Image (cartoon, rainbow, N blue to C red; front, side):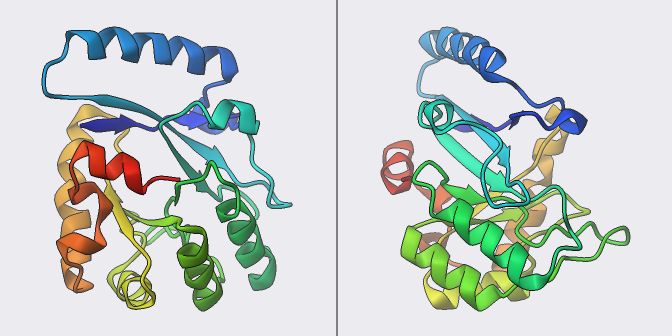
Amino acid sequence: YICITDHIGTFKIANALDKKRIRKQRKEIDKINKKLKNFTILQGGEVNIKGDGTLDMKDSVLKNLDFVLAAIHSGFKNPKEQITNRIIQAMENENIDAIAHPTGRLINKRPAYELDFQKVFDAAKRTKTLMEIDSFPNRLDLNDVHAKAAIKVGVKLIIDTDAHDAEHLQFMRFGIATARRAGAEKKDVVNTKSLKEFLKILK
């Protein structure tokens, strides 16, 4: 299986899908799934966490997606407590399955924002929210140290490519390497599971 997680909402920089385009994408995915054998395409989305912790897409739309990531894309210089609370508020939404690139870093370009990892990981465990290891070479976020801390608390990880092109799918190996450096095992990473098991883990 594969999950397509385009940006959704009003985030213009990322050409985010609005409600109408999300519906159109669902029709396309459903059409292709009918032709596929032993393989499934899931429809997901990456929604922006706004400055006040609310999400840039209505719950009525999010609940119809198979998988939803939430991420911070602005306000990187907010105080540590505010950024921590923004992420925790997003995790408390029943439609949010995972937090994408949790520290916001871009290697050699942008440092990670200030975050209270203990609070975030405790909330992730409580809300059954997954933490992402973004495999894109300039992200690798969570890094190995933070991924190890998440595992220690009992938080489950999901490794993905953040692919913006088919060629980027090969970046998966970098995320897997990061998880291995963190001491992750198969049981710690949800997309090692079968489709049926994977869907059962999601909120």
